[in-house]
Length: 73
Image 1 (tube, one colour):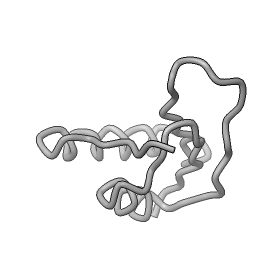
Image 2 (tube, helix red, strand yellow; image 1 turned 120 degrees about the horizontal axis):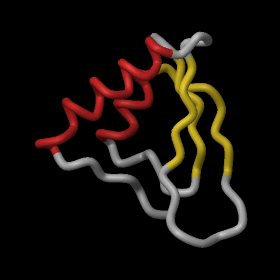
Image 3 (spheres, helix red, strand yellow; image 1 turned 60 degrees about the vertical axis):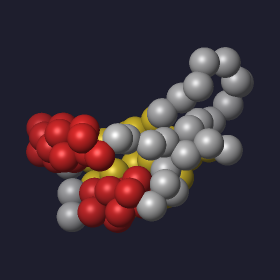
């Protein structure tokens, strides 16, 4: 499985977008899936806080073809 890598120059803006989307959600929840083309299935990861998701992203622990459920901190 391949980790999702966001270049440092875009990471701050990426975090701001995630925060904005969670705030706009009536349930304060976001589903995030980085998906390769093809493949017939995805894995669904349990709920993560936004700060936990960002930390995992920085540590290259967010994987393609895994759906993450992200909630407000």
